[in-house]
Amino acid sequence: MLVYVFLNNAASVAVNIFALISGYLGAGRRTSRKKVLGLWGTAVFWSVSLALTGLLGGSEPGPWLYRSIFPVLTSRYWYLSSYLVMQLLLSFVQEGVERMERRRMGRLAAALVAACSILGFIRYDNRAGIGINNGYSVMWLTVLWVAGAAIKRNKDLIARYSRPVVLGALVLVIPVVLTAFELRDIAVGVEPHRWVAYVSPLLVLDSLCCFLLCQKTRCVPANAEKGLVLLSGSAFGVYLIDTSSWFYDVWLVGRFAWIGELPLALGLLMLLGITFLMYMTFLLLETVRRKLVAALKGLAQA
Image (cartoon, rainbow, N blue to C red; front, side, top):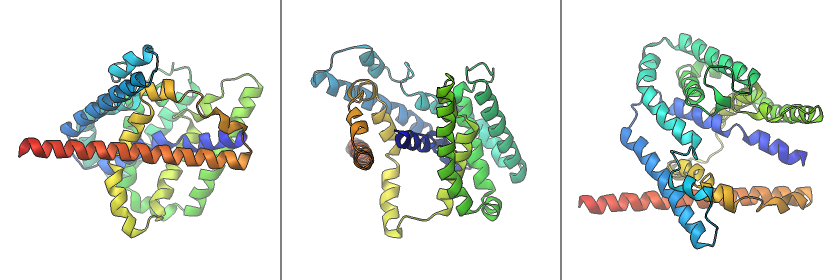
């Protein structure tokens, strides 16, 4: 069981890394309002489509149905809701990023990440008074966006002082440390989830190390890059499908509990295999949806 906890802790960096990537790639580029509104439309499409699939498949109507019809208003997709609001703020943030001297920006980003992470972790009960909300907030995504932009502006300096071996060791060791702290808290009756909250200082450090390590590691063949670029535009759709109300709150609940009863080696193989299969299926579904939308737009303009 501890191995599964370790894997969960190792994967908990995903949201922070996604926000860092947004800042790294978005720095110096203007926000497309059309694209932002398109994300909202995609969320509604998948939420409603999967709800209809559930109803046709015999699922009993419940609160999940209301959340499916109004996914953004009911905060079903907290990341999307925060991301949409953040896009409105980026017009102002971009001005500061472009005008600020890069080293000064790096220091500011480091101070913001450290302050918000430490305060958010200390006051895990959401009473820090700065709107961090354990990382489920516009403010935290904006802070990580600034950090990603600062990394881009200072990438030559960072590359000079960071070492892949050290980064790789930290990426492996930190989830182990997080697991140990969680077990300690459980033993003394303290809420253990604070260690893997998005603002946990150790998880933030792990996220940054993983992000920087991926920058330094070229593990994708050159002939596969075009395919990845094509599919990368569908990655956000995977999140929308996976966390849709019907799929996450109804279909997925307890469905794979049997994996924990298997021998460890077989259980890990099944877990990783099913996870990969689900990810690729969702990725292909979103890719097909995007192709269909593009084709319909082409027909409408013809």
